[in-house]
Amino acid sequence: GVAVMVETATDNPTRTVANVRMHFTKGGGTLGTSGSVAFTFNRMGEFKIKNASLNIEDLELELIDFGLEEVGEDAEGNIIVRCAFQDFGNMMKALEEKGVAVISSEVEWLPANTIEITEAQSEDVFKLIERLETDDDVQHVFHNMA
Image (cartoon, rainbow, N blue to C red):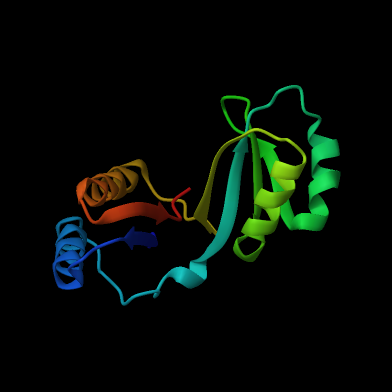
């Protein structure tokens, strides 16, 4: 019941689809058609910012007009700013104008809902994700496992 979205980049789509299908089959999953699980994910822009004594509340107020959807901190203490995909450019421009040091910026597919599964099932899903990530054509793998 876990949805897995795979982003690929290839010069040979036939080979890539065959390889991804093989990984899903070996992992006990099923490969759907292009975009078949996209509705369970939200495409978001994500910016990682060095927390150089920035006030998160002030930053939130300054960025809300540029499409800010959520702000928080990661495990390393960096600030994470998320916006809708269509506001990615506006947010990047706003951060540059404010002189905020962006560590990284990328587009993520975040799950709308997460699925709780057993530890044994999660091991199988992680094995599948690991196999997918070793494929040369696979760029990113996203899932909705809690």
